[in-house]
Amino acid sequence: MAQALVRRLLIAIPILFGMSLVVFVILRLVPGDPARAVLGLNATPELIAQMHRTFHLDDPIYVQYLAWIGGLVRGDFCVDYRSDQPIAQLLVQDLPVTLELVIVAMLMSIIIAIPLGALAAVRQGHVVDKVTQGLGLVGISMPDFWIGITLILLFSLSFQWFPSSGFVPFTQDPLQNLKDVFLPSLSLAVGLAAVLVRITRAAMLTVLEQDFIRSTRARGIREGSVIVRHVLRNAAIPIVTVIGMQAGYLVGGTIVVEQVFALPGIGNLLLNATLSRNYPIVQAAVLVLGISFVVTNLVADLMYIVLNPRLRTASE
Amino acid sequence: MVTLVRPLSFARLLRRRGMLESTNAQLVTGAGILLVIVAVALIVPFVWPYGPEQIVTDDSLASPSWHHLFGADSLGRDVFVRVADGYRISLTVAVGSILIALAVGIPLGLIAGYAGGRIDSLIMRPLDVLMAFPAILLAIVVAAVLGTGTGVVLLAIGIVYVPIIARVMRAATLVVRREPYVEAALARGASHRQVLLGHVLPNSLGPVIVQASLLMGVAILLEAALSFVGLGVRPPTPSLGLMLSDGRDYLSNAPWAMIAPGVAIMLLVLSFNLIGDGLNLLLDPRLRANGR
Image: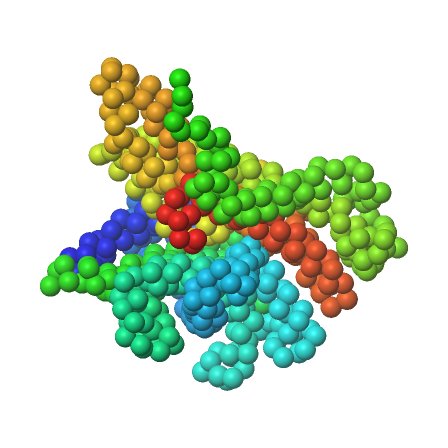
């Protein structure tokens, strides 16, 4: 198992390196002088020269890359030319919001999907199964940001149960914080839950037709216990793996949902920076979100290796 | 000569294997919804009394009625005709981006899977890096560099899909190239080019087609998301995502301006998902056997 873990970790290194190259190239692909694109038409020659120096824009391309990556390794993402704040500080402020959104959405989708998927598998072919499958298909067909707007219409504007925008950190007011992230997380959770329902159902159906389940039932063990202790437990590997993989996609989903709910997360930071052509922030935010995606997938892979008895016993 | 086995028609062969029954529902429903949508997109903008960009200030935020089936937006534009025209944009972006991805991804995956070794690594490793980005993030990166507009969105989504198509094509090629008929063709003296184009390519396309139909649905969601945040189609072109963005500002007094384009997107994506699932079921005997 340790070998498999190390191999998977080693694969992530060239991916992260490649990712840094792609992000580095962004600024260099912008037509014209990147400094002028970032600073705008009214920028003074001094400011443009300063940005050229900071980003080594007049040096050979490999020097530019080495200087940039060297800075990143030291945690130096440069300073935002518009707000004069260090970009690293902006990222540190915004990352927890995005992470909280992803974690709460993941928990919500698990709570919604696993019982529904299990029910559909147990009642295969019945109305419940068909309705659940139909809901799953509809769930993956809806844009998450539209679900968000619909939730605002229902629960913020009509019932006034939850706020439609804004964010209070958990440390300041835990209850208000949970209210703030409830609707955005739910809008992200619907799509993930739809995928999970399908995976849970398929994984459970595979286990349900195994011989050991027939023997367990023949031993007279209660059906509820068979489902929860034997079927669900054995179906856990694909379910957990998919949860991990999908968590990576939630990172992408947060970008637009954060904008709908005006949440101060990295996605919102990235969108605002992209719209205002603030490329150093675009680079930093893309890199952080990309790395979060790779790390989440890595954790999912590692979980798969740890959970899979065949991979576990092979090394023992 | 007496035939011992009655020749099976294609439909009877499918029915005997339980394929027609299981795929009918999904494929037919998906294709049916898609046909209706395509008809709406092609016909409505030309026959409707209102144009997609026609402003009728007196009808600003008018509620759904016989005049305006889905109501009117803040500028008094008819939402129904805009949804129909929005479908045209969505379908153009979905089909265009998939064609770009297929045109680039199929040859790359085919060559990588067939050649193997260093050529495989040379092609697939950079694509692995692109795949390591969430799709929307990569599309935003492309939009950040190239700007906005229908063409850019189409290109951005196409670029996002190239690694996915290439990977599916490579996986299918790896299986097909070991088939006896490929070895037989090579032994007969056929050139690699002939084998690739005559045997490997046509027999590897099945999974790519399934993937492409599922990706069409995701392309529509991506286009809507990019247009919604202002990085996609430019106003006044009635993209469904842009309509959602505009409708959001009048949520409490004109919810129809947001509900109609949202449902429209959902139906279009649903049709592609149903077609993708139906095709998957048709091509994968394991799924058919256990009703998964």
